[in-house]
Image 1 (cartoon, rainbow, N blue to C red):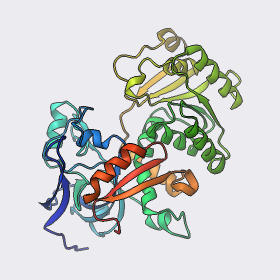
Image 2 (image 1 turned 90 degrees about the vertical axis):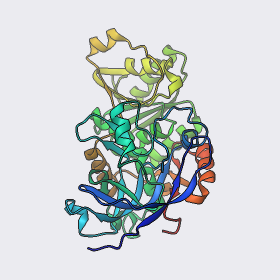
Image 3 (image 1 turned 180 degrees about the vertical axis):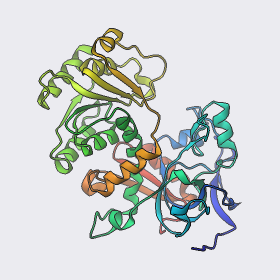
Length: 395
């Protein structure tokens, strides 16, 4: 289907991590082999977005300047190259755009218009044709990063009946799904998620419940743990759930609490099958890591997806003796994204405030970027997220 493509588009462009951005008009990038032009409708903002782009970048993300940032986005296709038959014939299809860009030769994997990492290969991938991301009215992406959404099922009032904004939670769920899928978390298994009260740890609780696992959520914030428990009972009644307080400093207390919780969920030995770890940078010395490993059964698996700074001490002898598998994961594969979307479209993985206790705190236009950053930084957490609407809030 022929589609008229605007020669230019508006975008939010940064020239420094310490000065405000500008709304600029840029030339629309040409379609090249294997690419798709997408109109971003809802782009995800992480809680730490303002640190990366407006507070001097204390996290040390690597990105070229000037830059139109932008991570995962819900959008509609504008046009696709002729060698992309699944998207070439019909414009306007609702899609989720994966922000993970992968070099064809496997030399680099980066986050589109967010972080290239320190490697030369990653920087080269970020600085050329993929420099600009989804914080504009048009973005060009590789076809493999464009995943079709069944709009009729997801948004249809006689089907799942979600709102467009509800789909913004897919980005957090995709990351959690990648780590759980890498260790083959299965229905009926006991999955420990710790810490479970951050954005991605909480998303892992949702995914594990949807997979049919029995879940132990470990964390310090009792209010969030209660919210997760309410979701488990309301939307996943056939999946067991237990929450426990994270001491962070007492290996004995954390181990005892885990053993008790596992027994309540049906483990005769007080052990768990899978430990999903999403430790933040400051948690490298936290007792929950060793406690979680100690709680794993023989042949158990651990998924490491966190950002613990520095070296972490592991109980070497226990890992060897029990034949444990420790799997590091960064993001996910394109195949995992399609699996996740199918889980949502089948109604097994819930979205929205009604079904999942998850809600969007606000949708902001490009010229409202400062408010968007503030709300995301102050309020985004597990089950709460903020979206940027590059093409306008009414689209």
